[in-house]
Amino acid sequence: MYNWNLLSIITFLPLVGVLFILFIPQNNKSSSERNSKSVALWTSLINFLISLILIVGFDQNDPSFQFVERVVIANGMMTYQLGIDGFSIIFVILTTFLMPFCILISWNSIKDRVESYMIAFLILETLIIGTFCSLDIILFYLFFESVLIPMFIIIGIWGGQRRVYSAFKFFLYTLLGSILMLAAIIYIFINTGSTEILVINKNLDINDFTQKILWLAFFSSFAVKLPMWPVHTWLPDAHVEAPTAGSVILAAILLKMGGYGFLRFSLPMFPEASLFFVPLIFTLSVLAIIYASLVAFVQKDMKKLIAYSSIAHMGFVTLGIFTLNTQGVQGAIFQMFSHGLISAALFICIGIVYERLHTRLISDYGGLVSMMPNFAFFFMLFTMANIALPGTSGFIGEFLTIIATFNTSMITGVFAASGVILSAIYGLFLYKKIIFGQITNEAIEVLKDLDIREKLILIPLGLLIIFFGLYPSPILDLISSSSDNLINTMDINLSKELPGGLSN
Image (cartoon, rainbow, N blue to C red; front, side):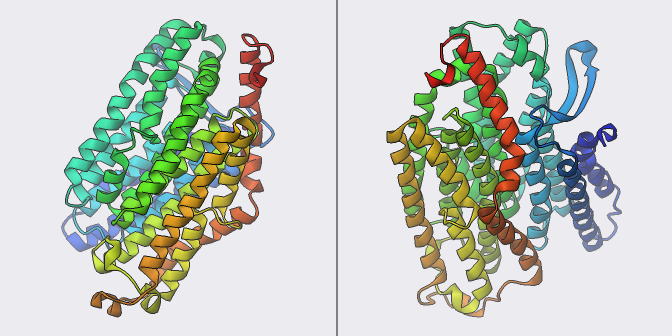
C-alpha cells in the first residue's frame, strides 16, 4: 500500500478528469455540458473512494508522517515530498468527500461555461489536497497560493453582481498576506539549507527576536486565510458573490488552510514565539467570536449571516490551537472538521432556496415550512448543529475548545462561552424568519420541496453531523497521537529555554 504513491494519485487524479473534459467534443452544447458534469462528478467520487484507503492503511498510534513520497527536484533546491499525519488526513478526506457535493449542487444552477466551471473545481481539488499533503515548505507555498487562482476565477466569472470586486478583494487580501510568509521561507532556507519541513523543524537555529519576526510573517498569511479579525472583511463579500459551490468549498475547506498552517508551521517551528503571542491570539479570537456574532445578527442577507458565523466559529479554532494543550488542539481540529460539514450544509440549503426564489434577503422569506417541510427539517438540523446543540458535531469541537480555554485563561473562557449564546440568538432568529411566520411573498406558495438530487446531498451531511456528534471517537482517535506529539515536542523545545516548559 505504501508503494502505490497513493497521495500523488489522490492529489493529481482530478487533473485526469480535467483532461477528459478538455477532449469532450463541442459540436453539441447540451451534450458536452452534460458529459462535462458527469466526468467531474465521477472523477470526484472515484477520488473520494480512493482516499478512503488512507484511513484503512493509517496507523493511528504513529504520530509520524505516513504514506511518504520523496523526490529531489530543482537540483536539490527543493523536494517533491508528500505525507500525511493525523492532522492532514482529516482535511484530505473532508476535501474529497465534499467535492462531489459541490458538483451536484451546481448541476442545474450553472448554465454558462459549464465545462470551464467543472475544470476550475477539479483543479481546485488538486491544489487543496496538495496543500494538506506537502512536506516541503516551497511545495506547500506553491499549492497554498495557487488555490487563489481557480477560486478567483470561480467568484469572478460565476459570482453575483459584485463578483469582480469581491474576487479581486479576495485575491489581493490573501496574496498580500502571503508575501511576508514567502520572505520568511527564504530566510528559513538560508538558515537551514533545506526546504523539507521535517529537517527545518530539527535544524532551525534562530534567536528569540528572529523567531517572533518569522512567526508574525507566517501569521500574516494564516490569519487572512482563516480569517481572523480584523483582516476578515474579504470573506463576507466573497461568500455573498460566490456561487453556492464556491461558498461551500470556501467555508468548508479553504478557511481551514489557515488553521492547518498554524498547526503545521507556527507551533512546531516557532514554539517560543507561539507562547509569547498567546495573549494576542486570545484577544483577537474573542473579538472575532463576539464581534462577528453581533454583526451576524443584524445581517439582511442569508449568506452574509452564515459568513459572519464562520468567522465567529474560526475564533474557537484559534483559541483551541493556542491553548497549547492537547485538549485544545483536538477541539480545534474537530471544530474545523465539524464546521466543514455544517457550513457546507448551510450554504447548500441557502443555495437550494435561492435557486427557487432568486433572492437571499431574509425579509423575502417566511412560512417555508408550509411548502417545504423536508427542507425545514434539514435546515433545522444544520442550524442546531451550527449553534452547538448537544448531539451534533458542532457541540463536540466547541465544548473541547472552551474547556481547554478555561483551563488556560478563565476570563478568556467566559468570553468564548458567550459566543455560544450569541450564535444561538442569530441562528434561531434566521430559522424563525425563514421557516415560520406568515407567507408574505406570493412566490413561496408555489415552491416545490426538495427533489431527489437535493436529498442525496443533504442526507449524508445530516447523518454525519449526528453520527460524529454522538460518536466523535473516529476523529479524535485519528488526531490523538499527532496532537500529543505536537504538544510534547513544543514542551521539550520550550523547556530548553523556560524551565518547566508550557507549564510556565
